[in-house]
Structure formats: structure tokens, C-alpha cells
Image (cartoon, rainbow, N blue to C red; front, side, top):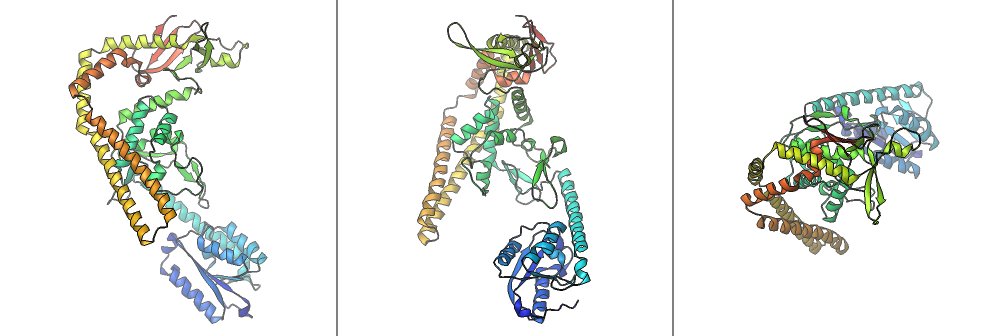
Length: 527
């Protein structure tokens, strides 16, 4: 098309070039070099002064938050540019709403003349090509939508095959050094993951685990990965109970590839929405597990047991396991003073507590210790009827030998030493950079203090772990100690109780009904 520019010296042209990965598939004609050559020939032919050339290489047309485009808009705002030239309309953008905004509103308001060479669009003159602009924008948008659908289909297919398509693997794993879309264990981070699961099995809550990790200065997954936080806050770099809870429920740690937990709202938006669990893509046995399935299952039981309680004020052995037999709701816990002024916990029906006087349910008031002791007596009798001390001793010896064969302590020691050596090398490099003038004194002191603090904390952990290894008892003595301890009070372990008991129900007559997870008849204790 012939473009008529009567007064070329009145303009300061911006040459805008955009190329996305999808556009590369259309051939070399879409390349940055080709677009630039075409635009430069045009301005040379019409003697147009060029203010600057703006290039966005690798940016989708549906996203208008591109660095080159934003820089061009800033120059327009500063009245440095009053003409924009692109190869075609799709280079400006493929979102017909935003493209229409700039074509029909923004450019006219800023008195900017827009020219699209191959489409014959020139907002400086009246032409039929300009009237077709909205339809061209819609067609470009439909092309982007079609491409997005195809890419999403390919990614979904890879997910179903168990291939990792994310940007960074979950904490505890890293990308395979040679195989694409595969992940392997990152032993340094995996040691922390195993430790978190061990703390959860010991009965610690997610909040307690997070507090202990923060107190010991353990780097968070984001800090460990070196991810930058755009707007850091007071809790940036700290472990949270939500982070710990998410890790404890992530099947990736037992060797299952879990993807599709969130999806983009639209191909035009970078915002994502969380998917319900049934829409996740889970493929079993795709990589080496960090946690064995039995440990993972027991941790899930502990986490689920806490979902039935809202109280964080009082802690007790059967927390989250005790329910009302009549209405089915979890029992609340209240604190009352006895005659001696001592605190005593009582179970009370939550339905009765909320609707007192409505006759919906009864109080069910009973001491927490009464219910706990009744449950422990029942569990103790079942365990002692099912297993002998000799069988326990044999199992303890086997477990200890397996643990020694795995030598997990040695693995943790190697990981800590490796990290300490790495930090020492970093400190050496920083000091050399300071001597050479590459690093200022203020930055050197700030970074040096941070790295030195992390190294000191790791050295303390290493020393503590080495002492544990040196003071460990002989396998035979340790097995006998474990067996004796379990036989005396092992049945009082919360982990064991949650594994054995599905729920405990309290009737209005204050009978205690224990429902086990295994094939054992319901135990009823009458009070």
C-alpha cells in the first residue's frame, strides 16, 4: 500500500518490533532482523526521523507488560515520540481489547500516528483499511487463543506421562543433570525434608516445626533456591506453618509426580487459580522418593486428626479424636478450676454448648483425663495381648540394623560439610572482589555477615550431629532400651494412637466407645 506522509520532519518515529516463541514457528520472515530491515527501509524511503527502536524478543502478544513496549509508552508520555510503526498489527499485540484501546483511544489522545505496513493501516489518513482494524485485531486474538490451547494440551500430555514441566522442582529435589523433564534428590535439602517429617511424627504441630526451623536459622525453600522477593516484608525468609503443612502433604516426596495444582485464569492473564485435588495430575513412581510411604501415611493421619479441633489453647493426647456419639460433632474442651484451684480440662458437646436450652443434645461433661486413661487402658490391653517382649526386641534389632545400613547420619554429615565448604568458598570470593574494588565496603559487610552467620549455624549443627554419632549406644543396648521403653509407656504415643484409633465417641451416659482402624471390635468403657 502507498503511504502518504506530507511533512516527515514533523514526526519522531518509534520502530516497534516483537517476536514470540510461537511466531518463530511461522518462519524466518517473522524474525527480529527481518522486521527491523523492513521498518528501516520504510523510514529511509519516507525520510522519517527515528527517535528509537524498541524490541521485545520472546514476548507474547497477549501480554502488554513488555519491557520494550513500556519504554515506548514512557517516551510517548514524555512527548518524545508521535509516530509508531510496526510490521503488522499482530506485532503491536494479539489481545483485541488492549489493541483496540491503543488504536482507538490511547494513540489518538496522545496525538500519535500509528502505521502498520503489511496491513495498510495508517491512522493519519482516512482509509478503508483502518475500518478493518477491529476485525484484524479479533483474528489475531483468535490465533493467540488457538496457540495457547495447543500449548496447554501438549503440557497436559507431558504431565500425564509423569514428566516434570515446571520451572523449579519442589524443595528437596533438583533437575536431572542430563535428562530433560526429570528430577533427582537434592541431598542437602532432602535432609531438611526428612527432619521435618521426623518432627511431625514426634507429635510436633506445623507451627512448632516452623518455629524450631526459624530458631535454628534453617534457610526456607525460597532462600535456599536464591529466589528474589519483589516486596519483602517482616516475615520474608521465615518458615510458616502453612509452608510446613503443604510439604507434609506433598506426594512428590514419596516418588509421585504431582502437577496441575494451579492453572492460569486465562491465556491473557498471568494470574493463577488453585485447582481442587481431584483435578491434579498425579503419576505414581516417577522418581526416587525422599520419604517412605509408611512414614508419609502416618503423618497424614496425624495432620487429619487435628482438622477436627479448633482449640489451640489446650493440648492433650486425644486432640481431634473425640466426638459426640449422639450428634457426631467433635467435643469441645473447656478449663475449669477444682476445689484446690487447679486447672482441669473437661470434654463438652459442642452442639449443646452452642444451642444450650434448645434440647438439641446433652452436655456430655467428663474429665479429659478420664477419657484418656480409659483409652490408654484399652490400647495397652490390646497391644499386650497381641505381641510379646521377645517379638518387640527382634523388631527393634531389625529396625536399628536397617537404619545403620542406610547410614542417614553420615549422609546428613556429608551434606552439612559440603554446604559449609561452599559458603567458605563464597566468603573467599567476596573478599577477593572487595580487594579488587568490585564490591563496596558496605555491601561486603552486609553480605559477609549474612553468609558468616549461616556458616556458623551450620557448623554448630555439624558439631551437634557429630557428638550424637560419637555418643550413640551399641545396637544391642539401644534395641533393649527401645523395647523396654515401648513396653512401659509406648502405647501413650500420639503417633501410635492416631495410627490405631479412628475416633473415640462419648455417649450421654458417659460410655466411651473406641473405633479402631483395624479389624477389632469396638471397645466400650462404662463410667
